[in-house]
Length: 421
Image 1 (tube, rainbow, N blue to C red):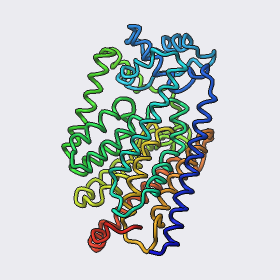
Image 2 (image 1 turned 180 degrees about the vertical axis):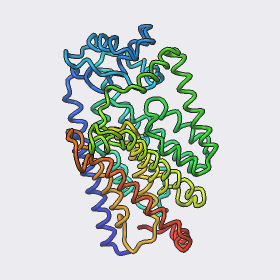
Image 3 (image 1 turned 90 degrees about the vertical axis):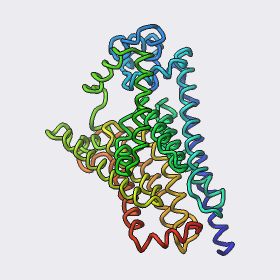
Image 4 (image 1 turned 90 degrees about the horizontal axis):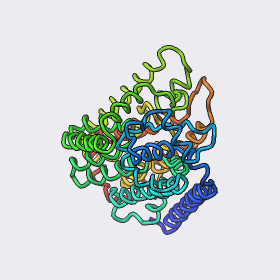
């Protein structure tokens, strides 16, 4: 491999690092100029209010709109911004109680920093665990990590004070444990971190585990979810759990057309036309079924674990009935894992190669689609852009899995594990 080619690869990696650093610096700059007075209007406000109510001995009221509004106004929310309901499971409010000891502004900043740290930890863990070829240099690995971290979802997560750093870390920990052949613990990590606040995001991953016949992981996931239920019952009481079930059964603060998964796709295409809900459910079930198929392939071909899991996570996000831009951060660990797997594919090109460029390009496209959807409220074709890009991403990984699972390709794949794409 010529030195000129290696130099070009290093320059490309350095350019990616520089661009990602600029984007991340912009996120931090936006976060620093947000005044503390606006903290009670962030997404974290709902969690802060619920945790404050629990600490005040009013756990049974954490899903009561009137009580939430009064507490939100008392925390400093301006008039007209008092409708930020708590929509997560009770365990989320329980584990966030320590942050309610701070003022609303300080709590939001501390929570945002925690979520960003969890995202960085998740990507570091996957980067250190993923199957990079032995001779693969460190600079491109750092470039992939920073590009994954600099996705638009990270900016939303950081500024809004959302929860997705927790399930993103759960995906990363589960991946690392799967790689170490610890499926029960992998499932527990996934089930626990998802069930705390965002269980809807792992529908496809659950189907993937079932298709993979990974029953120890399924059992671990159920145990992890069960622990979060116990935390909610102990910390908030059975009435709060019942109120949560009633709240998600009759959602009122999540307009369908503004979602970015199946519900957002059909809601933005058809508006309030009859059958929109059924179309969304049908598409979600179909996506979960494809994720299950990816699991069956991975069961037969363990060497296709990375691409099959990447496709399953993309399908899982697409299938989610409640998906917004910050939730796309769950795909970030899979960008790193997928890039590492592709780096070992046979290719006449030096890194990054066409396949890796496609993965990074789709990740950037997903960020741009989410950015465009942020202010888009119109109904009509082509609808939300994000679900289309998620389908494109999932379709790409499904195509990789289908091609690589052919018998004639398997031998070439094993023979080139140490090659650099």
